[in-house]
Image (cartoon, rainbow over all chains, first blue to last red; front, side, top):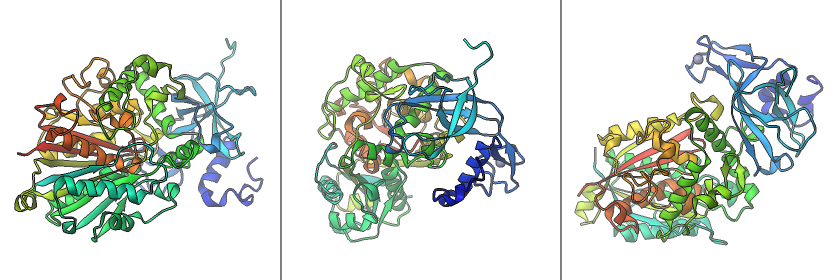
Length: 146
Length: 388
Ligand SMILES: [Zn+2]
């Protein structure tokens, strides 16, 4: 689901760097831009926003992130009209944090319960309102899930 | 450095002004400021004007020349945009211009027209103050961003919704006598607790309203004030500004606002005071949690202690350190691009003794104003002092 002509469908060209980053995330190859001092950030970057270093490399995100904060949004912007209520979270993925929407495995309309410290994986999903791609977190359920 | 005085302040009433154009709102505020200060508008040498979303709300860009016309001044006019801190930065540049001796009289303020848009479009408009690629596209709204900060705060320091409800209740009580306020009615803690959720843990009364309004200040050099026999007892003695990473997720700490720490430190240094000297504060409470974060950045409370300030009665009108005696953004209203000027207008009135709530702070000599943009990626702090 990566090289399927996303750049030709009329949605990608305005933010090419972002589209490529989402492609990588969808392929399980999510990455951060990291400087020699270990500051992580998200693309596009020419210099590290923390220290100004131009010596940047792509480093993989951790496979599992940790939720640092979240909110269940009841009053959405028009672009999320059909998605609300939904849970937005900020999760730490090692070199950088990501912001995304938490979705469960089922097709329920209710946002899954989420808490600070919860483990999540990251994927790319679609906005229910208009099909635009967005960052999605999925709770990691331990074996013997209660 | 030249001593900078607030010669005159002007506000429109805050609230819904259906059908009134932005230019008419700003003209009302500006003319009131000239009248309040007894300043001849032909003496104005610059206009610094704040506005955030006029291109969306009124389909009107390039607003500064329009506002110069509306106010009846002909001078260099510039629009400043830093989201909800737009007027704060406009005022700050006016202060610096007068302090540097580049002008004797500067008109500064701002205007926002918002109620002519449907609520969902306002929500969309305000969200553009966040990082479009990595926040807005991930569902972060303006209340949602502050909700993320609120939950991070509760996790780091404790506290909860009821503490925030006390902030809302306090600011609503303060707005009751304020003739410019949008919501001049009390809201009980229970009422705030029972309101519907906007972005959990924030509910309806944690959020500021959608507001039309304008603010204007006439800032002059002390020498000009003396030469013209003006009664301008309040001086702007300190100004500071800070910037942080745009996206909340990129901040060092999700429950702190370092841009405001930096702005406060610079403003206090400029004024030669420390936080202990502050008698009264107007802070950017776009959401109740924002007041808590502001109090801590201003050094008025230690991190983790601001949350209980309203509940314990320290920041209420009869407390030791009254905060948002105007009603704050929360109850007075938040016409985004006008707010930074409105805070300084209210603080000036409080210090001069002609605010309906001045009797709450009869001995106040030092006031501080805190204006924030976005999720405090931008912050401006000003120190006002009674100079004579
Ligand atoms: Zn770096």
